[in-house]
Length: 111
Image: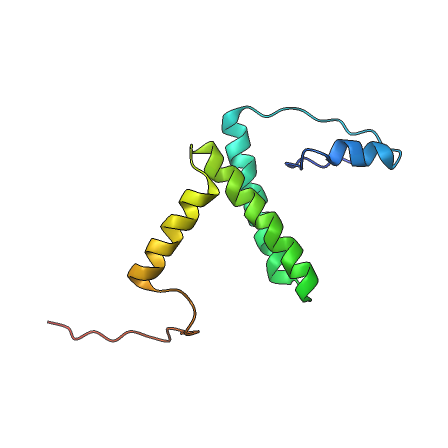
């Protein structure tokens, strides 16, 4: 039985499948398709984070997300350290989420 998958996988998944008695058919993506697939994987992992029901699973999914962020940064000639530095600067400028603020509405005076 062949099960079609069609998604970006981690490097060791073919070996894991082989150890489980399966055969993985893989291809190597060009840079453009790799960038697109990373962004698709980002959406997939974000959905899994939203569905996480316990702390252990949430941490696993967050680690997957961090791996993807690091890979996306690498495709742009950056690294996680640079992204973290940008995050810190942005937190100083516009804040973080520590206060748990939820914007309900904004009223502006018409002039």
